[in-house]
Length: 234
Image (tube, rainbow, N blue to C red; front, side, top):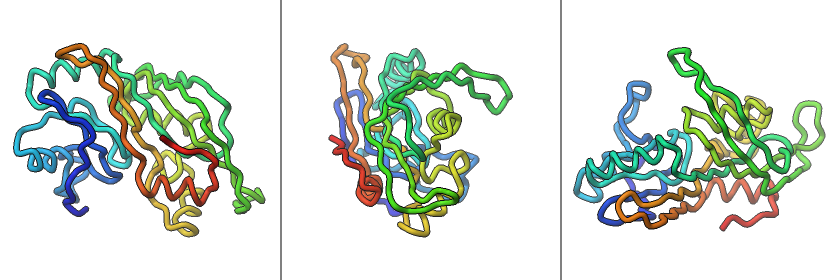
């Protein structure tokens, strides 16, 4: 990944947020030793000061990623995420026609084997059906959904949407291999279509309401176009 300047979408003396591109790790990890480019180091070098990630989003997920600029605000803002006091909104393009809205209450298992309560709420923004056959079907159906996770488990949205049989396009390993192959071969699209669109919370220092939005990526926009979604994201 090229070391392009990160897109800063919010900043004050306490916090800074970026629009994280798809494929960029938040920080160094043992499970991804093949890269030496991370959001944490890029932002630190860009600002010329230490930064502290107060939450995480998947490497394959784009969108709002929030950092604190000192240890005290790191602790305070991390607590907001831990105590579920931050409203998070994601966008995803998934296989099939989803219900108009719904709640997915499905416990997820940690690596240790322990089950954790996990709840996600979603609503459908748009459906589309295109004349592209796949398997036994003569057309292909997709949905654009808005998801608000109540809890914050690893890969929660990805696993929850797969659980209701509407996997996110280009998700691996939770998605649909046939769909992922179709998107890569027909449209050259290989970016997982999950985007952290917004976060909203009370500022931990002055209690002002902070509302941060991140624009979708060019690949997400392109996919909406070639799938003929009749919906404008603002």
